[in-house]
Length: 364
Ligand code: AMP
Image (cartoon, rainbow, N blue to C red; front, side):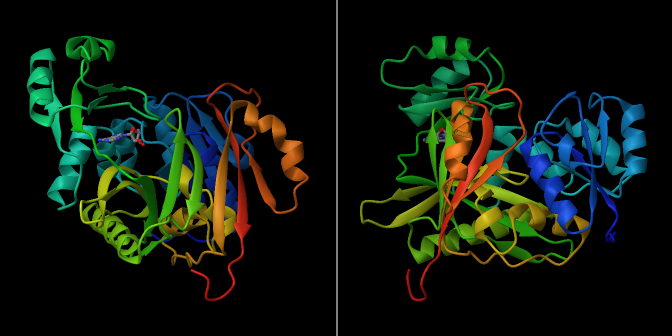
């Protein structure tokens, strides 16, 4: 099913990603309808329609399905049952499979490994005894993560020399977990890519990410890696998109490693079945933003060019950073994006700032 201008995209989730998707949809003559449980949230301002209801409310979901032409999601903790319920009634892109897969780190890592991609070594951990065996197998340091509902470093713990393994296990609440071997990476990078309804794949240039307190602080594009590594990242994204028969934008987070001979390598950390914070630079720094790209893909439209407009830096405005909005506006080469959140809270993503440095031809 291909959308015509004037059609409506249903978005599950009401955060800043939904807001920026809704703005991108408007630009190309499409409307959006947000479905989320929150009464107030960033996406509503930008959308023509809203349903404020729990994700389990079948009556509200039925009405939503009737009101929209295609459904997408902007965060991966939407219950898969919600997406499956809607799938029988309206096209959902990307579908339930990508969502289910990325909700469970063990299922996700197993999928990546089966697709022939390199991940950190990992083992399922169901109880304290299994953890002791897993630590013996993977060594220290290693990272214990809950299988579900982890984000921004929540639900994970580093097991070092001397760590009390059962105390670490208890602190994470005894939920099903996964232990990962520690990857001694040089830098963290991500590739944002899209696949159309017809199976065309495009990717943005690999970008490099710096985190502070487990939250993305800065992204720069392109990443400082060799040309072969950049190509390899693109191949990895294509493998994932095709294996999932995916429609829309997806991000793959990767670690860059260096072996004893100085060769760069890539290890896949995780995939996000949605537009991604490390792709925000594309709003000002690429021919087609990741948000418009996602809209085009799920509308069944041709994808846009991913050409970069220069070297780009993106800074997240986290918590009180957002109070600097006046100073940012006063600098002519900065592009300010605020998400319309009324309350500043520590660690809350309030907006972001982009700077594009035009490259002169021939510059690498
Ligand atoms: P995640 O929630 O899996 O994205 O992990 C959050 C952050 O923890 C990553 O961005 C890395 O900096 C670090 N991390 C996660 N897994 C590993 C690993 N296996 N080895 C080393 N660092 C890791």
